[in-house]
Image (cartoon, rainbow, N blue to C red):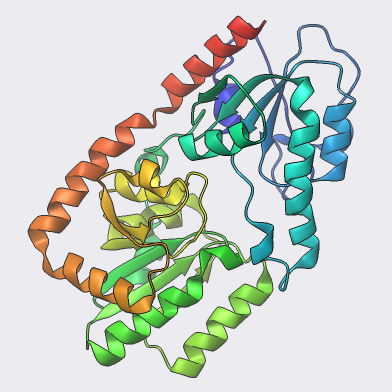
Length: 337
C-alpha cells in the first residue's frame, strides 16, 4: 500500500518509505534511523498504524511536519498475552500511542468502515474510509510459479482449501486443522488443507504442525511464507478460501481470493462482512470446526451456489482499485494542504 502511494505521487513529488524493521533484501525501504524529524519544507508524513512501537512513536511525536494517519487496525492484545507477552504489550501500546498522536494528525484515513469506527471510539473525527493503495487484482497480473504448480499436482489431492495469513493466535489455524480432520476422517471427503503465511509466532506454527500430527490429519500442508508467484499459483488451484480468524480490520487475502474467482468461507467478525460482502459464506463468530466442515461440504457439492458466489465476489472486488484510491488519497492531501 505504501509503495502504491509512492508510485502514485507522479513526477512533481517524491517519497521514501521507512520501517522500524525492514526485511532483509528489501532495498526500497529505509530504516527508521534515517527518518529526519525536523521540519522539511513541503513534506507530509504518512503513518501506517498496525502495532505499537516506542521508536516509531517518538519519531512521529517529535516530527514537525503534518501527519496523515492510515489505520490498518491493531490486533487484540488479549489473544497474545499467554503466548507472546512482549507482542501483547506492543499491541496495548499501539492503542495508547494512537490516542497520544491524535493532536498531531492532520488527515485521518481508515482502510475499512470497521477501522473507522475504532478510531471514532478513540475520539478521532473527520475519518475517511479509503483502502488506499490496495490492488485487488495484484496477483492476477502475476504469472503463477510453474514449478510450484507442479508441486501442487504432486501434493494436493481432491479439493484444495486455502488459508492465507500470518501465524497468529487470533487467526485460529487450529480450527481449520480440526475441520480438515472431520472432513477426511468422518465425512470421507477428499480435501487438502493448505495453510500459507509467515511464521510470525513460531510457537503457533509448531503447535499447528503438532496438532495435525497427533490427530494424524491427512492432507494438511503448512507451506509457510511464499512468493507472490507461488501465491498466484495457489489461488489458481484453490477451490475455496477458508478463514477462522476472530479479528480482521480488512482481510486482504479474502479480497485476493475473490479477485481470483475463489469463494470465501469465514467467520462474521470485524471488517470481514464489509470486505467480503456477498462473495462468500459467513459463519457465526463462534463457529467451530463442525460448522466449517458442513459449510465446506455444502459449497463443494452445490455448484450453482459456488458459481453464484464466485460471480458476486468478482463484483465485490471492483470496490478495491489501487489507482483510484491513490488519486482520492492525493485529493485529500491537497485539501489538507
